[in-house]
Length: 391
Image (cartoon, rainbow, N blue to C red):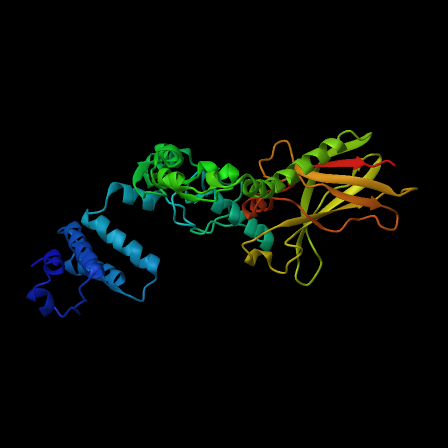
């Protein structure tokens, strides 16, 4: 009897060979299927014992409850592929997924010099972590060096991923990725939507197929005028804050002395026993004065690489001497060729020879993902606006 028959049959012959029986279950079934496939692939040139040994390893790994979950999953997938029972989409998923998060990339796909794939988010996160730890970023698979200059995008993988089916996040039905966005925004009956009376304060959120029933029973259209006025006043508060910010910017633009410049933050390390990352710009001149900008990560937290939440704060320093107090308003915005998302926030300070540097103030980045983009870059390029207030 051949090795394939012994592994796949599971009859008395297999027991008589002295093999340890494995408990029945999904792992055991996957191992038996893999054993059969390996035995058939062995052919006459490979001894039966070698085929049995490989099959037994797969069977033990798939059925071992103490094995890591990902190892058990990958072993089961390998067994299914060997038995020919895996779907094409599932096999492509395991080939095209990101080596870091093990998920299909949603946008850009980068590859190291050895061809291992990383989605854009994980790639940027690896570069940011390496900058914080003062190490060279490496591929998590082969440990070769990675950087924006060493890695390139893989357009073929990006196009292949766009053609693979993906589940809708609401109804869980599979759709081609090229049609998924339209389905989720316009067609899915389970997509989250809002009541049409949200303009008068209705807070309801729910699936689209329940919208008609809710709107027919919504209590907001029947509220009195006084009740609606209270609701609308609360909703207008956030709008007033936004308008106040933009009106302040427009007022600053009417000042006589206005200056702006492109600034480049360069990374440095402190001389402490535990070094910390900080950023500093070269000296620059605006409004006939010499200035410097400094920035730090997570307010000089000891190990910012261990935190998922990352922020940047900055301070403005006046390097030249002044004969009278210099009252200024200033704000930082993204540079002309950057895509980082920064909300405009106006800061105010009176500079003197004795008080020539501001406190550290938050750089208003939208979230930690945008902060990682800045940390992953070789330099941080922003635009500084200065407005001199004259009395």
